[in-house]
Length: 260
Image (cartoon, rainbow, N blue to C red; front, top):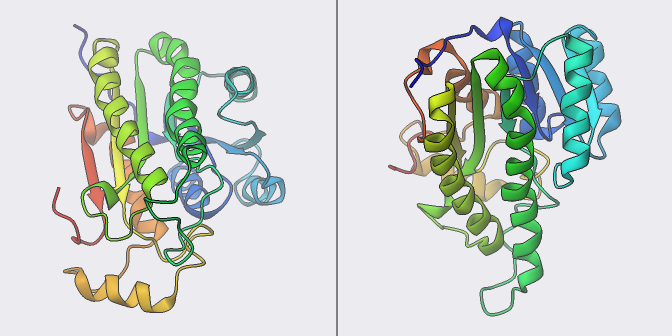
């Protein structure tokens, strides 16, 4: 078994799926701010992705439209990134969220929800992550280094709002995180998950009433709701040299609300 390689953030080519808006934009900015070259993937948010490129420059941010549920589009995106940056993608952050809004008042109950909602979330969270990892692994093996960070949720430890479809798909993604960690570890590739609670504020959480934010803040040791920028800090850790011996883990970043 080879030793796990350490590569500083500025030397990495990072793919952030759903990387143009909300939490994804915070993740893209965090990596670009550390000098990494970032592929800001988007499906519909072209203007936001181009704004990120203008902010950091074309040598640092490459906007690429691709549906992560389509393996052909993902493979083309990985190839485009390599040509643009002259190096393979070494870090993948699976953040893309398929058409989901955090609105507890509008969610269907367990007695009403249809399987099609589960299928859509599994397509985005699990199939999308599998597609990106499978497309990126050859380049990671070539580089002798790889980092995969999957974005999860604290709701499967603390289902205060039972978003059945979203939570089930993220629980499955945690299982995939751990099996991939065991499978890819000998190649020097680590696979981890960072799980948050409700973030203040992203496009997905914009429908959440202010009273809910206040209730969550009052329940956390820090007495505030985690921001996307704070969440991104933890993702940087898992891509950094300081996490070189950490794999198959799920770190909950929610101000201490949930004890994993």
